[in-house]
Image (cartoon, rainbow, N blue to C red; front, side):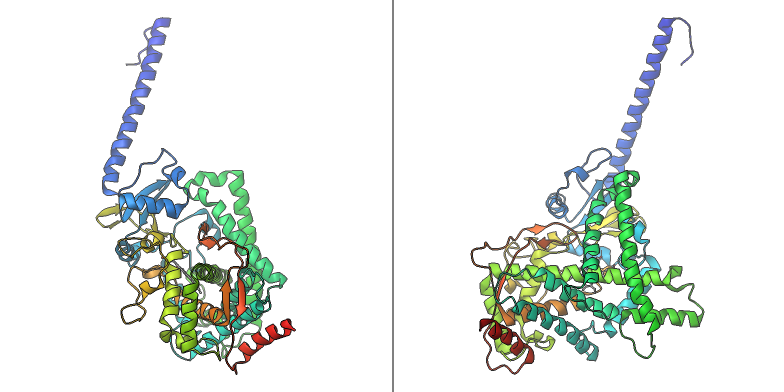
Length: 532
Ligand code: HEM
């Protein structure tokens, strides 16, 4: 076909032949790719077509909003191509439950970020390391009081209440002046988790603590900045991505150093008869493994101390921002709905009285307070996309094929805002969580902590902390928007969690009736001292 017959005309003709052939071959190839992707997509969950190479990525603005719009169009399961990555989005709560109770949906995505963390810890770990670590943490955290009953629960309550009191005292000092809750709340919530993990607590002015917090905040920011490289792996070789990855690694090392100091000091003072915190429990585990001769297999052969460091980092980052953000949203909603705050205060006054702060034992008798916290968790959906899962092998869901290594996103925001499940979902209505007898009832489609095998490991602690902080704050203070300032926005700032925009609140102490409680008296003495 390409035989050379001589002469310039023949050369030109044969070049045209070659060009025509190449064009023809390219068209055949494209048609074959198109037909094969059509055939493949016949079995994949439905979804929008994107652009070649980029997929649907350029059309995604705010992910949870764009995904919710797509779920309205394509249904409770849809798929999109984001760069090189195939993503399945679930917004039907029954499908989320079905998928996440299965083993083949429990992996985490392989991303640039997880490659830096090296699958250590609990949040990014997989397979038998994840299974063993989850079991271990579940058991040890229960022993430290992440449970609804028993003596350990009382110790946990005491731990939380100590921080609640410091928090309220700090706020009382502002005597009604416009206050930003963020710094004092951040310190108090951090102290709850830090005392549980490693028996340390910080003050707001502690330089080490400030550095620690700024490293975490920067970590979240850098994690966001690196996101595009998760969808276009080639980009990790670009100078900008390389410098972000280097910075993430430097920050990780600095945090690791900080955690390692804690591990070393625990090692020096270790007493197997007195387990002070989670770090001690890990040291005991390592000690037992050495004695038992299986130290090399512990943590699936990963470095022992590095695993402890990452566990501290994981639990701190999962357990701090989420609770702080939920409490901030609660206050924002109380400012918008003073009638709800008043109803909570009336319930607290009746059940708890004006002599002490609310305790966990009061919770069953405070259904309206409890229902309000649940409604904040629903409407703010602070983790709108849950945490992405990944499929460990090719599998099937709702009759669709789900390829191996697909990213699977549980769209919690869409579940919590589904008008087919909730009456007027845009409306803030704590009553929706109360049944006809006035008792708290949670429908099975209320899933702020996720569901299934990888469901939040700290939900019990979260519920305890949210109750203690919110109920005590509203029992002690009236909350108002400062004079001359507008109500805080209900719009969320997108990020790893959906946080409220910055706002200030004016907190005035509520009158006491003959209090014999040291703490409430102390709060009032601050006011008295200030007013003279
Ligand atoms: C309002 C507070 C909280 C909310 C809304 C929340 C929500 C969630 C969600 C949606 C997930 C993802 C579940 C999944 O992968 O399907 C998760 C995972 C996790 N949470 Fe929470 N969480 C909160 C507080 C906490 C606290 C206080 C801790 C720790 C003490 C914690 C520890 C974890 C851990 C370790 C995981 C990963 C579990 C795993 O991968 O197996 N969380 N959380």
